[in-house]
Structure formats: C-alpha cells, structure tokens
Length: 400
Image (cartoon, rainbow, N blue to C red; front, side, top):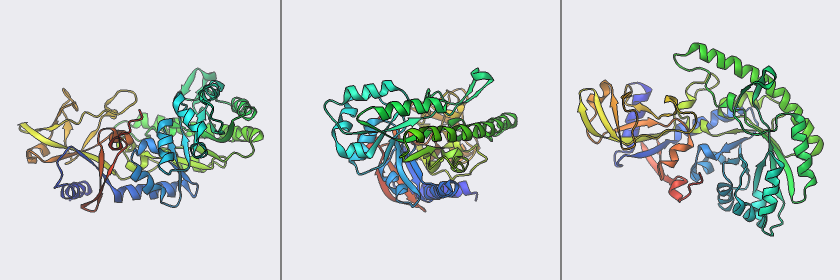
C-alpha cells in the first residue's frame, strides 16, 4: 500500500460516521509541517499568516509551539476580532480603508497595543487620522517595502504590485513622515518576496521553465538581501527602536532567515501544504488539509460524478488554481467540464471501484481559502477525528 493509499484508508475510517462534503486537517501532518518551518527558520521567530489558516483553534495550536510568535492578519476587521479574542501581537499585512475599524482601534488601548497597521503612503496616515472619531490612542505602524526585482532600468518588473516604496530613500522618507506625525509610532518593516516565496521552482513536466524560475529567484534573493539591509539601516537611522523586520514566506523561509537584517519570518501556507506548494526544491511538506466530496453518480465505465467541488483559488486564472483530486490516486477531471459548482465528473480506472456515497478526497490550490467553503474542520489524529472546530466562516466571520 502506498503512503497516499494509507492516508485514504485512515481518512475514510476517521470520517466513516460523517457525510461529505467535509473538510479535515491531519494534525500529524500539520504539526510536522510546523516543525519543518521552524527548522528552516534557524531560530528566528515565525509569525503565522492567518490568511493561510482561517481557523482560530489552529492558530492557537501553532502559536503554542516554541518558535512561533505573533499573527500576520489580512484585514483590519479580522485584526480587531483576533485582538478581542486574546491574540496580542497582530501585524496587519495590507493597508486598510476601514474607517470604522480605525475609529475602534484609536479609541481602545487594548486594541491599539495589540494591532500594528500597514502603510506605504502618507495618504493612508491621513485616512487613519480622519477616521479617529476622537480616539487618541497611538497607532502602531509598519512600513512595507516593495520587493520586486526590476531589470533593464525598471522596464521589466518581476514580483507582485504591492508597495510603491522600493528604495532606502523612499522608506526613510515615509519613516520620517510617521515620526513627525503625532498619534503614530513606527514599529516595524515588512517585505514579502512573493516571487521567491510563492512561486514553485520545480514544476513537473516543465524543466526549462523551472530552471528559469530558479535563476530568477537566485538573482532576486541576492538583489533583495542587499537592498533590504540598506533599507533597514536607513529606517533605523530615523526609528532606532524598531521592534521587527519581517520577511519571507513558506517557500523562502531558510533563505530569508539567513539575512542578518531580518528579525522574523512570516509563514502560513506551509502548515496546510496546498497543491501550489508541491513544486518546490527548497522543502517538502505533507498535505494536511483536504476536503471530501461524495460520489453521487456513476455515468459509465471509468467515470464517477461527485457533488460540487468547483472551488477555484484566487490569482491568475489557470489549471493550477483548481483543486486536485487526490485520493484515490489516479482520478482526473473531464477536460470538457472541469470541477463544477454542483457536480464534478472524474475520469480514470479508480472510478470503477467507487460506490455511490464513497468519498473522493481533494486538495485545494491555496491554503486558507479552503476554509471559506466549510464552516468546520474535522481534526484527525491517526484514524480518529479527535475534535471538530469552526473555521472563520463557521464563526460567522467572512472578512473578504
């Protein structure tokens, strides 16, 4: 029996009393992935990205491990909710225009001490000030550095379009603007190198593309390491009491941790290991989060149909954004239909061994987005469901 077949047997036994659709997290795999992230971080603390988890119980589980410290959130409303729930070190990774949220933040000392907001433009400071509604708490601020690799005098850009702050001078100018502004305190720098951390460099069947990605990432790491160090020096000259310099992501943990200028690493997707993280040479994780759909039809030889399953992930549209049929091994989509909103035909010889009501297990393309489809996660240890916990959605929270 292959390892994947053994996993299928475990998951089927664990959830035999449950009807699909359902989602589970294999805690043995989840914990092993967390330990691997810590190993690659080389002793630097790891801030867990809540966007990739979206379940308070699992955020608490990973933060209980020595080496994980703090949350990287994705909206201001989520940040305030987590702070009210007892999380006390929350870095909002994206700028916000949530005026009501900023009024709450500026009016509550507990929230203001727990949450740090992201800015990359003086206009964002103006918006926060205009939203204070009389609140006079000091707002903690982090500056985001644009990590993109620019070539040919800037005519070629590789990397996400995030912050406009690319140079040490840009960052230092905004740091001075924050320092001069009453009601704000600069506490951190963040730089997420998504073109390194979030792009696989070993895509099956595409050796030339994979080699090109590795060459690009090697050049990007070298360029960013030098620029990030210069940025930190420039900003510390303005704000010597910076608390942290955050960098990295699941796919670049060990590379980013090797930079002296970086004080902490961000990671989250590597806990669940969705399908987009199968194509890396830098690490091998264990798939920990899966969802099951029930077989509801047998249209013919070598074909079964499952209920639903059309859960595409965000990003540029493509087949890599689709869930992948995982267990039993050997199933594939019908290219004329793909995964559908209410039904999904699956092709392959394993279909002939599946009966009406059997479960087919899938992996989502991206990590936390799976939790937007399910209100609970069944936590599996060995071949037993040991707990069932709500996702953000299950707690009535849909932040985006």
